[in-house]
Image (cartoon, rainbow, N blue to C red; front, side, top):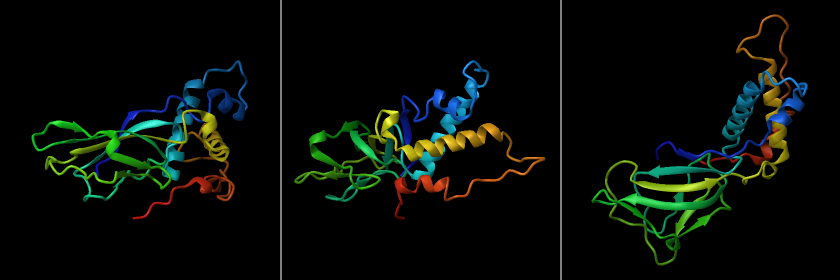
Length: 201
């Protein structure tokens, strides 16, 4: 399996600029660092997604494989792309190197298992006329909690604010002068624990 390809990024972030500014206690009239704060919001969301092995706001990804699994077996969606909300399409290159899209009536999504699985429906087998080239099979998915910031659990939102605050106040990889004390793990990263996707090797 190759690295998943981002097709459509989330339309919004779980934390708004206004929420971040309020958390940072920045006066409403002071907009000088809005671009920097916005970049911290994105960085915090990406880090949360990395820690959780799941996406937050709805986004679209291509997951590519060299071939289909054996007949009757499921396609396991790439780690880090939970929770799968829908399958946009399943497509492949055939032995003539022509793209073929499989009819959506031939497969079903198991969205309850994480990160997510695509099963062929009863009586259907995955195609065998697949090009021997690498990355011949593509599964395009949407994943995340949903399209709205309110779909993201509040403790993830709180964790993001803590990270945004840390990045805003500590802008170097190394500090000089007064020591920097980290919040205890049970207060910060433990906020994420109820929502982590633990991946089997």
